[in-house]
Length: 259
Image (cartoon, rainbow, N blue to C red):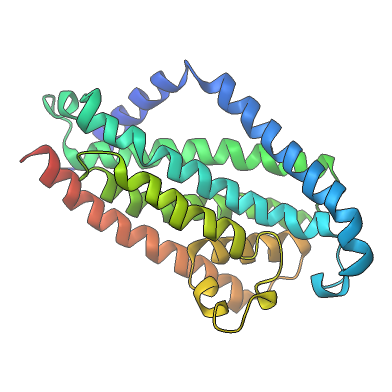
C-alpha cells in the first residue's frame, strides 16, 4: 500500500544523501548553461545571426538556443539520475532492499525518487533561467513558465527509464541508451536548429521525441510565441508519457524488489 508519508520518507532519505553533493551539482547547474550559452549562443551565434537569422524566426541565435538547452539539460539530468543510481539501489548498494525491510514499499521508493528528481530538476531549471536572464536570452515574463515545462520534460524521461533501469542486472544497456537515445535527441530534436532543416523523412521522428515536445514548449514560452492548443499538446504528450512510466514503474519496482 502506497502512502504519501512513506514516499516523503524516501524523499527525505534522498535529500539526506544529496546534502553531500549539492554544492557540486549547483555549480554545474550554473556553470554548464553559462558555458553553453557563451560558446554556442554568443560565440557561434554571432556567425549564425549574420547568415541564418531568417530561418530562426527573426530572433537571435542566443534566444533561439537558450530554451532548447533548458529542456535538453533537464533530459540529461533525468537520464543520469534514473539509470546508474537506480541500478545501484538494487544491485550495488542495495539500499532499495534495505528500505523494503521497513514499512516502506516498492512503490513508495519509486514515488520518493520521482519527488526527489522533481526537486533537483526545479533547482537546475531555475538556475538555468537565471543564467538566461543574465545573458539577455529572455524576451517575456512568460519564460518563467518554461521552468515547470522543463521539469515535466525531465520527468517524461525519468519515469519510464527508471522503471526499466530497476529491472537491469548490469549497466550495459545504459551506454546504448545514452549513445543511441540521448545524444541523437540532443542533436536532432530542435535544440540547436529548427527541425524543418532536417531531411523530410527524418522530421516525423524528431517530432515524436519527448525532447522536441519540451524544446518546442520552452521555446514558445521563452519567446512569447505561445499557441494555447500547441502548448496543451506538448504538455499533454509529456504528461501522458510520465503517467505511463509511473504505472509501469510501480509494477517493475514491485516485481524486482519482491521477487
